[in-house]
Length: 305
Image 1 (cartoon, helix red, strand yellow):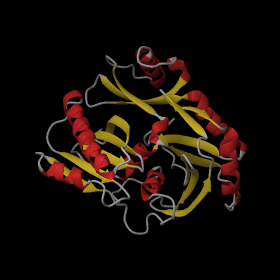
Image 2 (image 1 turned 30 degrees about the horizontal axis):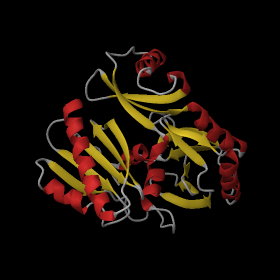
Image 3 (image 1 turned 120 degrees about the vertical axis):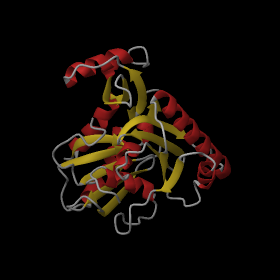
């Protein structure tokens, strides 16, 4: 599982995004700075179940039934693709490592050992990736159960599609943010959920996912409270100091007004609204732009939108 741009070879131009009720496909252009094609296919609601470690179970038949007609509309089956998962499929935890070996395999063994008392399952049963936090002995670990992820990969493989990289939508979207020496908080607003990612020196150090209240006004208040709490936690635990830039990613232009009002009363907090620019992402009825932004982020070349 590759959660950040760790591959030296260019990432695939093909990407898939499974959701509660539809499977979305996107193809990027050769420069990987715009989506040039979007396809979608409905999938039966309830086709996957969540548990305490994210994705717990998938209905292979339902996913295969959505994937087959979608791939059938393409000129040819993409041999390699990225998979942008719902944020709720993954879990994250920050651990104290006490320092890690330089070799990746040895470092992963230490991380799994540290997770033994934190997970409701065996550490051997999860896939994980980890990144150092702002402190040398703190580590952000993002993980998911291996078995259901393998089931998803097997469905795609049966259709001729190899999944080369898997990442949650919020982390994929961080690639679209301008490079900044200032700490950054990305608040990605989905229809019923809020994903928060804190970046220090360009690296994710904190990742959270929260369901949003159905009432619009309560959702605004909830967003403001969670952003405030997340920043306070990051300042304390990750020792972030000075100004912070909040990037708000939301398809609904009305969302975030209370966040902006809150920031006006905070010292050193600036709120910007994320936009990828004209022509980068096509408008597709029934697919929120924020979801398409995450597809774009899987292979974004790195410059600011």
